[in-house]
Length: 173
Ligand code: AMP
Image (cartoon, rainbow, N blue to C red):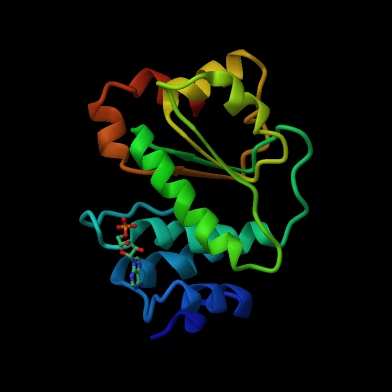
C-alpha cells in the first residue's frame, strides 16, 4: 500500500516523496482514509511510530482546498502538552506545506515565552498548535476565536491529562 492509495492528493503525495517517506506506517494506514472521510479517531501508537503525519497529512488535504480563514478564526486546533511538542508538530506541518502548491498557514503557541509576538502572528492561521494554558491566555486577550474550529486534535492526550490540564481542556472543549 502506498500513500496515493490512501486518498491523498497528487500534490500531497509529491510532498511526501520529497520528505523521503517511502510507504505509510501502520497508524497512517489506519487513520488517513478515516480522517479524509471526516470520522472521529482515537489512535494509540508508541513514540516514533509516525502519528504526527498520520493526522497532519489528511488535515493538510482537507484544509489546502479551502479559502484561508478570516481574521483570527482558527479552523484546525491541535492541543499538545508541551512547548517541545508544539514546536515539533508545527515543523512537521510546515515541512509538508512548503512543498504544496497552496501553502497552509500554521502557528505554534506555548507558554514560557512572551505572548505578544504570538498574538501578532495569529491572523489567517489555518492550523494552530497550542498548549492549553497559553491558548486560554490568548482567548482571554481576544487574540483568537475557537468558534469556527472544524478539526480538533488532542496529541498525547494522556500526557495532557497527566500534567493536570483537565480543567483547561474542559474549558477549551
Ligand atoms: P512521530 O511518531 O510522528 O514523531 O514520527 C517519528 C519519525 O518517523 C519522524 O522523524 C517522522 O518524520 C518519521 N516518519 C513518519 N512517518 C514516516 C513514514 N511513513 N516513512 C518514513 N518516515 C516516517
